Image 1 (cartoon, rainbow, N blue to C red):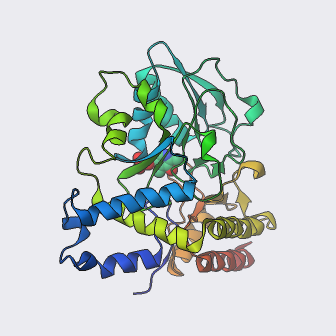
Image 2: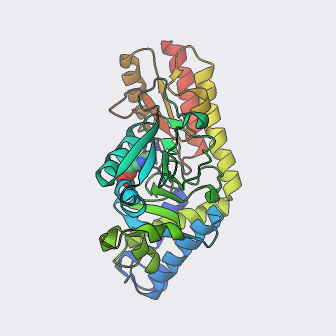
Length: 358
Ligand SMILES: *Cc1c(COP(=O)(O)O)cnc(C)c1O
């Protein structure tokens, strides 16, 4: 069976050559006679994988050694809790931007831990958007400022990150390493791995090491960043297979060259937006200045046409185009590993569909 074009929002498409490599090594990793899944997380085979995954991420992020790369189970959703547990001291306030469904979940957890000030709210705006940096009403002496760099459901994306006095914290689940950015601007970033980095079930956390010292003494061991820093994410058994795939994905990114990859991402998105902008039939759902290069969301004139669009696209080998159940419409998720040929296919399908039904 031929592979389809998978526009799913996450878990999402992985580079084909990564899957092939994993398949090739599945029964016998590096001549060891076992799968990487069957190796001890303390053995030399897995250790090399673990170290390379961290080294690749550090290289891709241009990471200064004042930062650490951590692998933590529980996905981005556990980070909604770990960030305030570690960084929001008693009596302090954390600033949060409410930009949509994901930001909302982060805010909900932080409120269970301490004081939260919502410094801007575009979560319910239609068309969808991020706030302008000048509109953020930041708290003096805030513990940190939390943003969601890309709202996966709304299809909106921060283009220029705010400069903040308090450490900036970002949920980058759906756009980490999809475009150039300066890690120095952030105290902490985190991302569920299943969109741009690998399989689901774990988050990559990159943080300035000094921030990990803020954690209350009594916080639980597995919820402290300090534990993961001190044990190099090997305090307990990490998700070794997921980290192995992430290592292959980051190796693939380095081979392709991040600049080429980032350029390709921008081109892929621009080509779909061009169809939306030149059409009276399709309508992009995000404000132009904030529209996402990863999750392209749009509507058709009626829900019946949207249903037909999804059905016919699926028949033509384009899967996962249905918008999130909470908002409807169409969503084309085109993460790093999504092939250019898939964008070509969608663009011609959209033109053809408009011609027939517009
Ligand atoms: C997918 C996603 C999450 C949730 O990730 P899990 O790994 O399922 O916890 C959080 N934030 C954003 C922006 C996402 O896109």
